Image (cartoon, rainbow, N blue to C red; front, side, top):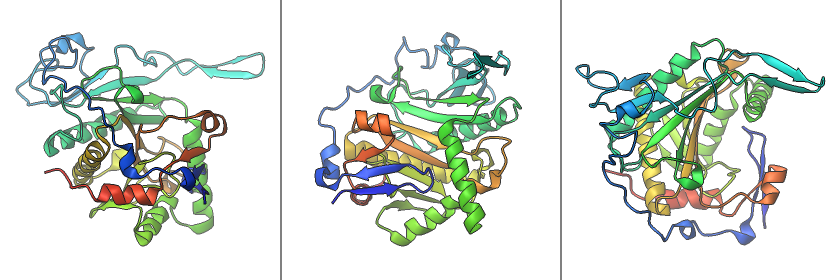
Length: 339
């Protein structure tokens, strides 16, 4: 029988359509993507083309190399075609006593994940992924100091279906003066749960998931990787720290190292098991300077793009998941970790 399941952290409902469910192996892509070159002379993100990007903000590079020159491991640059304007003011406006808006202030940067044009997180070295996640944290902490910014969204679009416009491995960050509605709902749910139970809802989700076991993909000393009880789509995967922590910027060095290793591991399993699918991942962290900050708990959400959204999902917000998360967790557990 099909089931309605509710995600206790987001408050959202999904339908686990067991009658039309697909086996996890059915989501494997049969058509392989063409292999990119290791270096593309025309790519603005490849080494040697640093002047084709806006001026470097922050980078992981040897101390004997200059900004905007070769030799880097990770670079952060402003998006050449930004969705928001960091020079704007946070000015509210109103129209017809009904419509509200804010001038488009915000920060939109690009992380150039690696000098190699042909790699992805699943195929990068462990050390290279660590460097990327340390730069994520460094830029997050820089942005959090800006008093105009409330929300910092670090995300990665991999592949055309996920919205990537350039082939070279890259991630992005959008920092805004508003809290998105979905984030505000999560905050409200976390506060309400804490007020009733005096505990963090993500901490309790981790504990309950570990007790149930069947949706756990990986567990390490500091993290758990699992398929949510109410997955929006097949192979939706969450990576959550066991230590209660609201802000990604407060992640410890040892946690960053372990997070990088575990992200490489799970994305390798998705890469192998599903045939290198397009995907998005997002670091879901607490907004800056908000009340009840201590009641929230950051995590990473990975969304492989193996099925399209349909009309009912877009209109109702109730997603139909055609593979049971217990089955997808079992499938991912069966795939070996990368070397």
